[in-house]
Figure 1: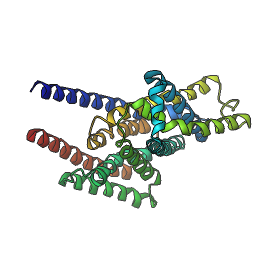
Figure 2: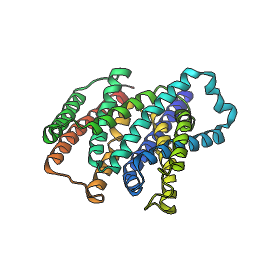
Figure 3: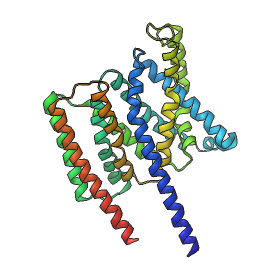
Figure 4: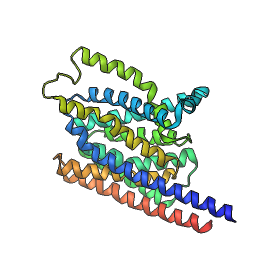
Length: 309
């Protein structure tokens, strides 16, 4: 009985830790839209390659410092896992590269559309790949998300490629991340260390040929140093997400993940002054109604499961 109680308390503590780290991660991701915009006029491609290299460098230094080289190198005895984690890192690199380009190109609101529907895509992946149950609430939320996208499609006459690319790439990342049970900093290093090598080569080439950030008109030392912060500012939320992903259900991750686009949407409209018309507002309202159904359904399902236990 005592062991059972200790295990229950430990699980509750781990779940609370996962919940708090996920909230911190989503809040930081939402606010960072201002940071990426502040890096103009540095080209998106330059920022992306610096980001890939710095995340790999910082996460590896932290991982080796925290766990030691002997622990760190164990992954190389299981190359299947290492390549799987590298693939996971490549997926999230595609996601954040698309996001940075979109923000700097003035598509903040479309990125918000992507991250609003992404929780539903994550939940759909949970149903398909992890056999999580499909409830009536989920069906309604999926229909509303599709309806919201249809409104945007009819209004603009084109498929919202940025939104769909962000939603599906992050859902794939979340699903792949769920397969690995290891400390988050180790996981982040394994995901990015191999990608950091070609990224560094590109950074050096850009700077040597005069196409990088150093010496660019309008980019002083202050802005260059600000850009170098993209490494820790990327590693921190990814680290927090890694902590959360191994401690809470994929469905819970999906619910909490619309905190970030909500913050970004508000900042995009009121701080960055992006155009936001009535049709876009209607599409967001439709998606939000779907998210309300989704959230209510998950809360009820969680309460039911706890009651049965």
